[in-house]
Length: 353
Image (cartoon, rainbow, N blue to C red):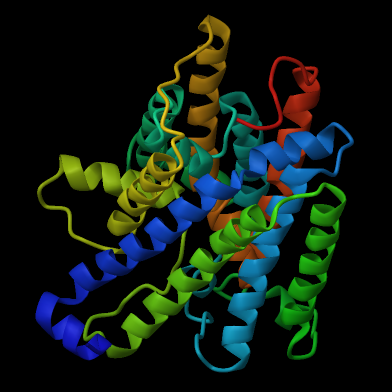
């Protein structure tokens, strides 16, 4: 069945949701098996280590860059009109939101994507944190916190009515993005070799990056055949978490890529944990971790919406197309996470969860 036939049979919106579901399942399986997490990599790096968490993050990031940049070179996708690129970006939002998100993910012991994966495997702490994250994200999008977010985002925006394309702005030759991705992948593989990371974990880490590229490719393909305008997008969890929450609370909400993505991650993570026998109920260890997790989730909800994306949305999805504000947000997430780990003394929180 070709794409046109599929759209004719089930409609454009359900097709977008189906593509989100496929992307989410791929992401969920790969993230659960690779234990991919920006927070874990940030904490490990902050403590002066370059071990498996940093290697996995670098491999995921580089895989996304390689797949996306190669696809663009061969004309398989075109992200110039992607939602992240076609509208002005916020430098101030990237800085403030990135720092808030980074600090929040350390307090919550997981970035938003990681919390979603853990919640599907029975981690009740992640369920609570994820719900708070989604509610605060929705408040920041259209609720009481939206005016504050708008004011902070408007302080400093990109010029020209669009986000900044770093490769074009730096006048780099065609293929520079692909070369950068390959070089980063080699670094990740060398770190993996030094830390004796098994090939299966490396494959799944690459799978997370591949899921990001898949989201770009699927939504771009749909945009070419759809009658109504379709957003070209990929995996991110700030806006989609809010949209998915409202989809189940508001009967007037419509199907879209976001609404398929989040359930897809839950399904994929659950299946991966079930098959490997890693389903396990876990709760809070005490009042302090619970308080930190709730505060951290709220910081991530507002910070991610202000920054224009979460650790996945800005850090991998936006990074793979070299959106200027996404790279700045990612940098600030690392700084915020490292700073919070320093403030907490690096005690009582393992680098992985």
